[in-house]
Each structure stands twice: as structure tokens, then as C-alpha cells.
Image 1 (cartoon, helix red, strand yellow):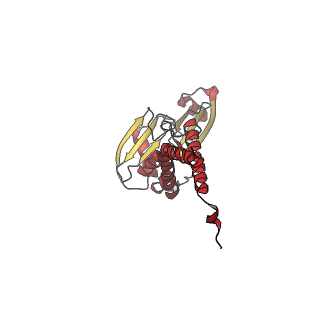
Image 2 (image 1 turned 90 degrees about the vertical axis):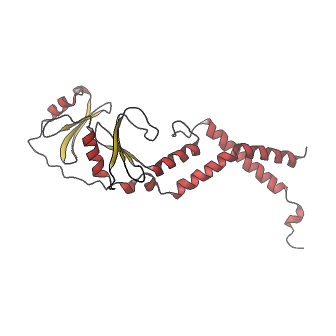
Length: 238
């Protein structure tokens, strides 16, 4: 069998095996490069975070009492800070393990885990749209579009983008915003890196093998392309 015939056969079968994945790489890459990352992150639906002045008062409960109210082991406290949550000053007591608790600085009331009402107020203060809240759910089991700490409040809005806000019930921080564009992006990202479970790892053998096959198709294509030339093809001037 001639070399060119053998090479053409290899090229054909390699292209058949890897062709679909190469198309997915190209299509997903086109989408990810075309759509601004700010749009993917739904930043257009977020109000700019405003710095609220913190008024320190002698009437605030003592830090030691705030620690006691948190219920955390005093020997494992890593950080204590005071901040504004909406319009109220709060202590955030954080353990060495990363667990956080919020305590009302005026009353000493333990706010964590945040109630549904308070979580919705936090989200409302950050949402730039005017849609109504569709539903609020306290999630304790992982969902595909949110890959961080649990439990977490998910606040869904009745807008065109089906926007969902994720708020930590322990410290009140906004953890993520998800919309339909992000969901499409995430699906294409999964296809792009070939991680069909976690959608995060691109250091795995499936991707390496696919990339190797794609390079092989390219190389065999180049070999076939250049082997098709004859000397007379390079004789531009007679």
C-alpha cells in the first residue's frame, strides 16, 4: 500500500473519530469569545455595591457577648469584624474552620442562619431589575449551577433571563448570580473541557487523548496536502 494511500486512510478515520469534538471545541470557543464575560456573570442585573458608613456606638453589645451569642468555640475564633448588613450594623464572627455567624450589634441577636425574609431583602438590594421574586429555596444539596458552600439561599426571579441569586445564610454574602446565558455558557464549557460531571477539571486523560487525536488529524492533513504537490506546481515562471 502506497504511503499516501495509507496516510489518507489514517486521516479519514482519525477525522471521523475526533471530528465531532473538534466541532464542539470550535463552536463553544466561538460562543465564549463572542459573549462578554460580564454578561455571562449577569453583572448587568447587579446594582453597584454602595459603601455604607459605619457609625460606631457605645450602645453596641460587647465583642465578647457577640462571640458568646455566635455559639462558636471561643478558642477557635479566627476573625471578628463589624460591618453593615442592609441598614443595620452587625458583628461577623468567623471561626478558624471558616464558619461564620452574624450577630446584630445593637441587640446581640443571632441572625445566622439568615431567615428567608432577610435573604430576600439582601437580594432585593442588589438586583437591578424590577421583576418579582418567583420563589426562595434553602438548598442543602448540590445543584449543577452552583458549586460552592452549602447550605445556601437560592432566590429566583420571574424575569426573562430566569435569574437566580445565591446568598450565604451564614454571613449574608452574595455568592453567585446565574442566568440563562450563564447556563448556556456552563453547558458549552462542559463540552469544551470534556468534564461532564464537575465541569471544572481540564487536566484529565480524555481531553489529552482528544487533543492528541486532533493534532494527529492536523498533521496527517498537512502531510497529504504537501504530498499532493508536484514539481511542476512550483514552476511559476517558464
